Image (tube, rainbow, N blue to C red):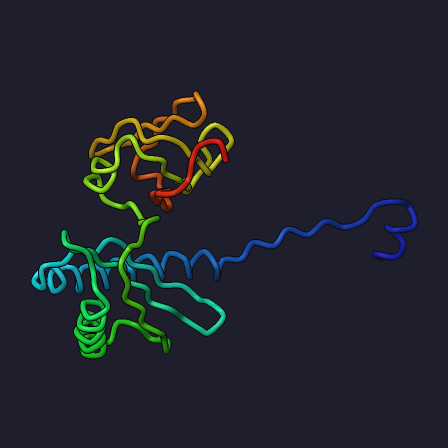
Length: 182
């Protein structure tokens, strides 16, 4: 039958939708929220802040990456101490089914921006954001952060101003050493 269709110029079209991938993304987002709720008070009690938390599959397997900060900066010893505390806490809570690698680090110069206060602190800086859904036919924006409120940010991308609700952000980061001309 397919051979016959090809002879007359019609070829079948198949649309595949990976339901498992969508379910996995939702499950991963829920897991990240649970881990965040578990770890944030403990890290705060150590005088530090959770900046970002990532859980993703990479070439060595699953990686749980935790970015922490402190007003005076983060040292290697801080990362080692928090890694031990977090590792023990996660072992007891037993939230993660898969084997994983735990990485704890400072946010670095191109730090992730997640909370409204992170954006507020970096007004006037160059940032890069990616939205979960397209806005004006694009998902990636790079420009000067003009304003930040608890609900949205305003970014100037080479003269075009975009107002982006924080709820639509997939990720955002400071571009410390970048310039807009790049």
